[in-house]
Length: 101
Image (cartoon, rainbow, N blue to C red):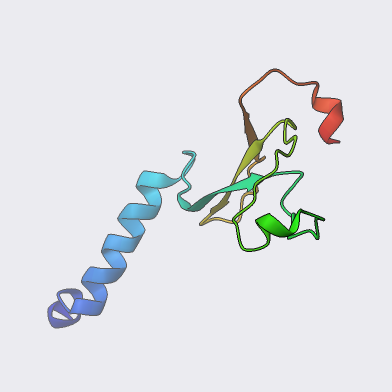
């Protein structure tokens, strides 16, 4: 009988039971993945056909584009115990949260 009490399986079981007693009743969860994503209104931009003088046929041409929309980053996370955390938004300016609902 003493041989079974000192077996590796028995020692492992004792450690697990001790850990359960230690954690029981305490908030315990682990963040296993956090990811930041950027959201931009103009992300679907594409090359456009523009009429230019023949003298500028082979030149690199640039024309201004108004991209003054607010840029937003969102942080989402997954936890080990399955809890769902509310994502939070990172902005460079004040905003009304109803705009994003």
